[in-house]
Length: 371
Image (cartoon, one colour):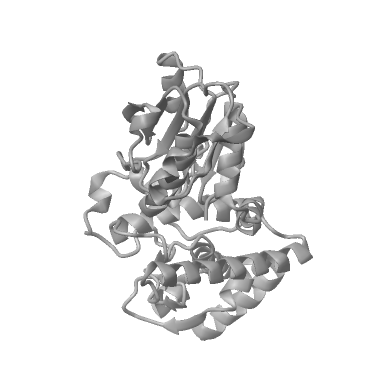
């Protein structure tokens, strides 16, 4: 049978057996492209090498199409940033292939799989763990032998990227609705879609409310003007209450964290802390280990937080550092993308996870989605 017809038949099979991936695959234009080794997606169209595709069994063909659909679902075509393209392909494959296996799909020989303990890691965290030899730009364009991911041709300004991501989220949620109707949505995709579909609240108000409640502040007074606005010509009230205990801010500095979002978060959190005026503010920068620790007083808070590090992610070290330093904090605010499953035990004090995504549910604390 002509390979184009075989691919069309494989997509039709997916409607019955893999409706989530089928809903994404049906939106993509498929083009024969002998310049690629296997398959590829750029989020707009899928290309395939006819000779490679023709060697696949029918089951493998379905799995490879689902593989490309999973790249699109996780927006790998939009998330590479400045990372090496070949290394990004390896990392992205390590992130999605366990999901495909959980869905009962059989990839061709050569598919990349991480150690069992790393099955829930994001592409960004897998990339951070790769040896430098996998990130030097050399070697095959598709080291995973299942289908590569290329940059989206529409990548541009932050506004354009945000629009593309929003459109993809809608596409993924709609695909999940179709799969749920048939009762065949894989658990790993269920968690992804729940995070994408979660309502976005005003995170600034959530952050302010959390800090004020943790610090024991509940009212305002004009007798003590708000120092933050004294230079504007307006007299605004300050919060009143007992002196606030120390507050800890942990910053996830892994390669997957958005530096621009970190600056916006910094502005908001320090604005709140200038009003609450804690005894001290300890900032802990951490990827897989502590990178830096800084301590500030209410009168010398920095303008913004720094991204120090760039490795993987481990949430345990900052909590250990708080204990080592002997801090009994009013609360701990952790800025992160939550792409990690390494958590400590509940520390017994309030914890706020300030995240731009929620791929997992932390075992303790409260999550506020920054958008």
